[in-house]
Image 1 (cartoon, one colour):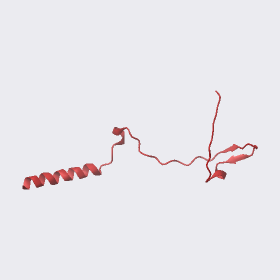
Image 2 (cartoon, rainbow, N blue to C red):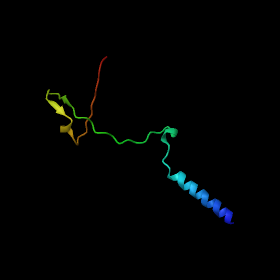
Image 3 (cartoon, rainbow, N blue to C red):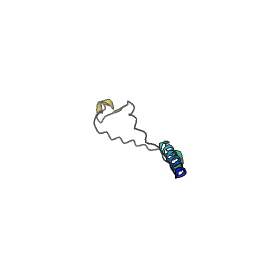
Image 4 (spheres, one colour):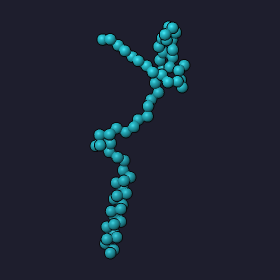
Amino acid sequence: MKRSLVVLAVSLALAAVAAAAAPDFASLQIQPYQPPKPAPAFSLPGFDGTPQTLESLRGKVVLLFFWATW
């Protein structure tokens, strides 16, 4: 009886250590979530030719289309 209690205690201790360890994302081929970074400051000409800065559009939904013909 005493031996089984010791084995149980050791098993629980090992399980607790294994559960507390950080997951190995590389072995699971999973990348941890990285919060998005703020967009760099830039300006583009508007339809009327005046420059539009990203800062002036803060809080609004912005949809950018970059199209190039190579």
